[in-house]
Amino acid sequence: MITSEHLRQNPLPRVSSGNAQLDAILGGGFPTNSINIIMGEPGSGKTILAERLIFANAAKIDDPRPILYLTTLSEPLQKVVRYLQQFSFFDEDKLMSGAIQYDSIAVELEAHGVSALIPKLEEIIKTSSPKIIVIDSFKAVHDLTSSVSEMRRILYEVSGLLSAYDTTAFFLGEYSEDQIPIFPEFAVADGMVELARKKHGTRDERYLRVLKLRGSNYQEGLHAFRITSDGLDVFPRLTSPDTPLSYTANEDRLSTGVAGLDKMLAGGFWAGGATLLEGPTGAGKTTLALQFILEGVKRGEPGLYVNFQENPTQLARSVQGLGISIPEVQKQGLHFLYASPVELQIDSILVELFRTIQDRDIKRVVIDSVGDLVGAASDLTRLYSYLYALMQHFVARRVACVLTQTTSALANPMESQISALSDAILRLDLEWQNDKARRTLKIVKSRGTHHELDVQDFHITSRGLEVGPR
Image (cartoon, rainbow, N blue to C red; front, side, top):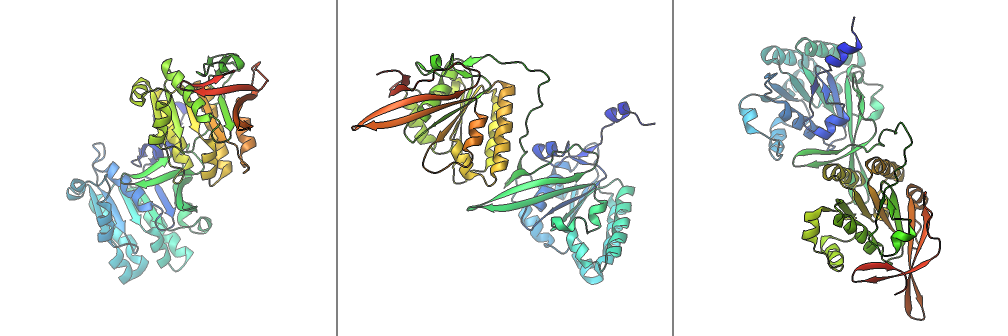
């Protein structure tokens, strides 16, 4: 009888994808001795994913058997290998030693049709007993069959061969989602991973999704990725942290670094809370945000400043305008993360932000501005889910976050949602009366705080913002 204790002591062995983030999505990797389908349109990244996987698993001490990459009627073998050499994970020694073997069945398939597949596989498996077989493209094999029953028979023989020799298989193919309930290969597959891309403005956004993975607690939903010289750079979908078992209030306050503002907020911003700074261009939002993050550095609280509009050179002017040396504050724990709004990819920037917070033990974060995230988002519902999950992680990790948002005549489609996510909202205004400027600050909202309600004047000096009369 199999007990729960037996299952805990004997976890399902896994084959790593070669990417730590993708392995985490898969619950540890692909199960060994399984049949997996990697599907997607041409150019979606299937071949790169498979090749990164085989180089990561070649010549393992615990299983030194070779790995076979078998091409069919898709791309010529020489072309596949030539493009492979452009990636950093390519290792010629693994090819020369036979740890990874590339072969083609195109000639046999052209001459004898789909009936050539089984003898070829049988010969290879019995001769070299590979631990992993990749067939690219298996969809090309499917297209050669004349009926569903013929495809089922082929799959029965293939799966029997793979099982007999403890081989993990990956079938690559240009399948579409509507073919899943129709094609028999999906019925025998233990795992299915879909790669997709969609156009957003002038760029493409790429996503992968695990549709099926037997025996695995995998992460559902769309996970963004990029194709780089290292293969796939994957950004797992950010989810909310586990709900705390008890309601315990965090009474910690963090000084804003702005003279007069802490008193208005009964001590400063909440640790583990989000504060929204809103106002027109030139009102002083960035200056206030910089003061907040620099105050934290001065107090030994590492900070992260994320910005999209001002490049590092432009931001340096703002910091130096406050009499601060950027190299000095970087040594003390201030980190910068810049991304151009033109190429902004929501998943990648937010996941990188979260990784930095974890790795650097960040206590204060500024996102300048949240409007750029809204403008770059191809899916506002997805963006809201990300922001909500991010704010919940901030609460759990006691990270204070400041968001800036420019108010204008153009309506922000997420204005109400962002306001709801914020624990406090400060509105900065710039008014003109008889050619004289007046800067005002108002606390619109501050959860759990007996805050100042009246509009206050403020001014900007060489030290930054100061609340009160000049």
